[in-house]
Image (cartoon, rainbow, N blue to C red; front, side):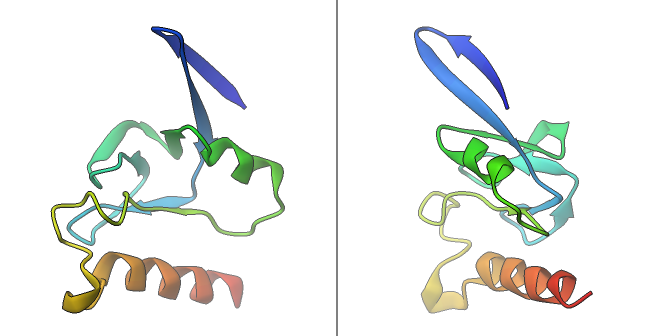
Length: 95
């Protein structure tokens, strides 16, 4: 677990195997809350994501905050980002 200190806020970093951006594309970087790729490969920043590194999880897929991706993961439109993430986790878990 790594942490960055900025203006009295602790930002924690966790690993991801792959992320899905707000457009449904697979990317090696983590994504921010809006589903936009970050600069670092296979890392995601957030206040709670570091806990994933402490668990024995086979596949970690990063996605943005479901309510902050400009409606691109709207459940009324098929929740395409979440659906793709779940399919990817199921596929990789079967191996």
